[in-house]
Image (cartoon, rainbow, N blue to C red; front, side, top):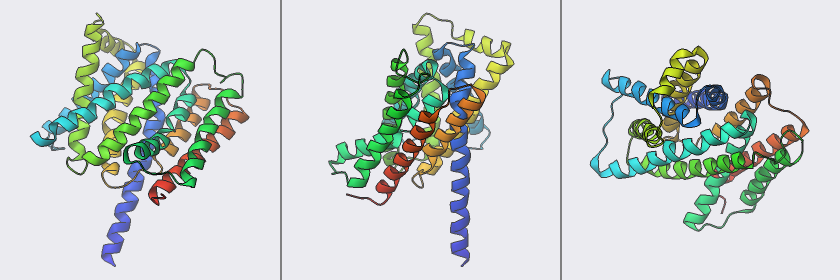
Length: 304
């Protein structure tokens, strides 16, 4: 009886952590928009991941987190961390810079759909009827959102849409790859390598572009709003939320992860960023959420 109670408490704890992490990631789109008011896209992610690395390093040096990467797993961890944040963050920040907060959240909601497609292609599995219908429903929801309504019609933002869809694909590859890695390497090591590679990679890009990497940090210090946005992205999202997400992924499938992120992103975008809202948004978001949920149900039940 006590054993069952302990299992229930642990599951509730994991659910609570996942919920907080999902809300935090849902607010990240608004944080990126706020930071982009004062910084260039590459400066935003350079500052974000540098602060994340410093914060994670502090946790390691103070003994709050222990990290030890085995030589056998080092290469795979580096490759996984290159996908997220190096490839993922570049496409994400450039896409968010071109489209609204709510649109960003909606497009990234397709991540589980791409996970299923990648799994089908890699393992040569034949998708079941529920999987096909749910994926089509999710994609149809996106089409409804962007094809109906003047404010969100496909116009000059098509590059942003493509970038965010690419972000979702990269995120799906990361999810599939990291799930396998968790069997060989602790989530703490993967999270640490993500912050390390992100800090090095994005500052290196700024140098190669001929820009002063310190100009972004000076801009953060000179503006409290920009500093708050970067601290939220760096510590709140890239350290705490990412740590929590990797922790949950190492134990179970994050079934509600994308849905909560999407709802949070859309609601905050409409209420705080003056994003447009119409029937197409309401219907499209509902179709996407239902489609993504059905995809996750089909995956969980291993429907052939």
